[in-house]
Image (tube, rainbow, N blue to C red; front, side, top):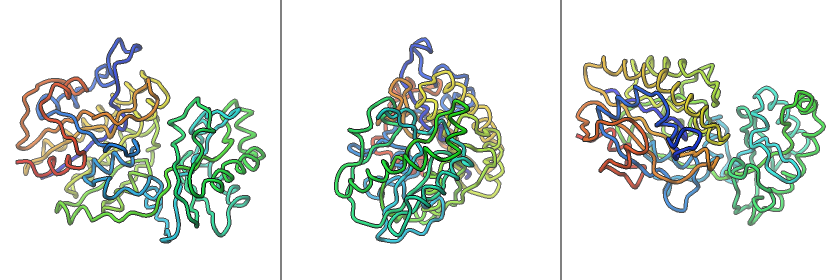
Length: 395
C-alpha cells in the first residue's frame, strides 16, 4: 500500500461576501479534490483539542497522529528540531518573528514578508547587540526565526498574526520571567531601526522590521517514532519549519523543494513532482502547503481560492495519478489542519473537512470537497490524532 496526505494549510473558511456567499473551497475549481470526496469518504475532524493553542503546531501534530495533550510543549521547539539545533534541557526556545509595530499597534506580523536574505542580516545584528550567555538568536526562513533563553519562565504569549491591527500592550508576554522577555522586544527596536536593510525597505515603501516578537515558547518534546507506531516509513514536503521539525521528531525524511517558499508564490508543481518521485521509494508522503493560510491571514479571499486551485492542479492531481497506477493499493487523504477564515484573519478551532479515497474506502456522499459536504456527512472525528490511525488501518 502507498499512502499520500495533502494538507492545504488553513484552507477551511466560512461563507464570504466577496465570493457570493461561498467558502474558498466552494468557490475554487478543484476537480481532483472533488474526485477524492466523490469517490471516497468525507467528514470532519477536530484537530485542536479544547483549551489548547489554535495553531498549526497543535493541529498538524494531531494530523500526524500524535495527541497534543500528551506531546505538545510549544511551537518553537518544533522549529528548533527542523533546524537541527542542540537545545539543552535548561533552555527555552522562543519563536522570534520580525514584525512591524507602528504607534503601539501590530501593523504586520511578517515585516512585509521580509526575505530570508534580508532577515539574516538583521538576526546577525540582534545577536551582536542583544545576544549573550543567556540569549541567542537563530536565523530561520523569511520573517520566522528563533531565540533560545536560559532561565526560569512560565509565560503566556500571543502569536502576532492573532493581533493584526490591534494594540500590542495587552498581548505582551505575561507571567514569570515576562519582564526580561518584554525588555528584549523593546530593546530590539533600536538596532533594527538603524540597520541599513530597514533603511532600504523604508525607501522602497516596504514595511521595515521594527521589532522582534517572542512567542510559542517551550522545551524540546519527545515523540515516539512513526515507524514503531504504524510500521511505515514516511516523508514530509513543506516549506514551514514547524512541519519539518515534527517530521524529524517522528523519524520522517524531510524532502526539500528549492522553490518552496511557505507563501503564495511557492513552487506548487515542484512539490507535486517531489511527492510523485518519493512515492516510488516510501510508504507514505505528506505534502503541506502553507499558501491558503497566509491568504487567510491577509484577508485575501480571491488569492486563497487561487492557492487552493494551484494545490489541486499541481499537487493533488499528479499524486492521485501516480497512486492510481499502484498495483498493491493506495489511499489519499486531503484535509486542512485548521480553518483560517478571511473574516477572522487568524486560526479558529472549528473542525475541518477531510476526504479519503482508495482501497477499501467507501462513502455515502458523492459530493464536492468542502465544508458543507463535511457537515452533511455522518462521520465526524472529535479527537484529531485518531484520524491517522483510521486513514492507515481502516478495513
